[in-house]
Image (cartoon, rainbow, N blue to C red):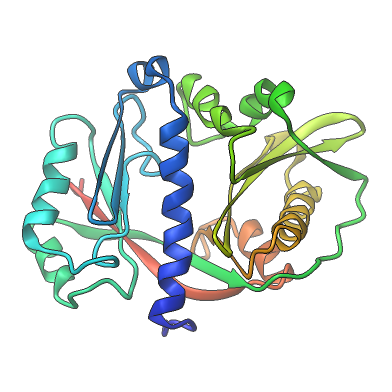
Length: 273
């Protein structure tokens, strides 16, 4: 698809997402790093997160290649070296505005192939009517960190330290963490990170027992309101693609909440198979 934003706008969307993950890594304790094999390569605007105890590409991926500065073949090789022999594979989430244009040829030459892509969404500030399904949303403070972590560890993680690590950001500057309650029981968690005039909405997880019951919509509406009140001028999030075999609840909720697709962001996977 053709991007619906300019390169400058895309830099803001990608930049706040990287800033959120960078701060999350900074919040990790030495115990978290040891338990998860958590390592990061952060150079020339590229953030490469490695989590050796987790195989998910959510925790083993590089963001920002070719955005702050033109990518080079040596940079791609450095990314491979960062992961080689430590995880089964990793992904480069390549923004369509990455430079130079022949970066893809370097990836193919090194055995990368596209496997999946995210949809990057964008909208401006403003309020969104919260769904009326009996879901209550509350801001989570440090006293709620354990509860937030238990939910936010999510389906992507198998190591319990993932949730504990993610919860380190509760109460940190720039972050807003939220919990959704159904009849007093916490059933979903999500977070918002704001830097400068941009806000990233991420880390949303709903318990299996309460999916399709309005918790994700309620958390999305609450985060849009929070971000707007905090002065964010641009809001962004990612969902899976609009493919028949991919669950589309998050995608549909984003569209209902006034987001539009900014661009597709392919995941270039190494190694394949």
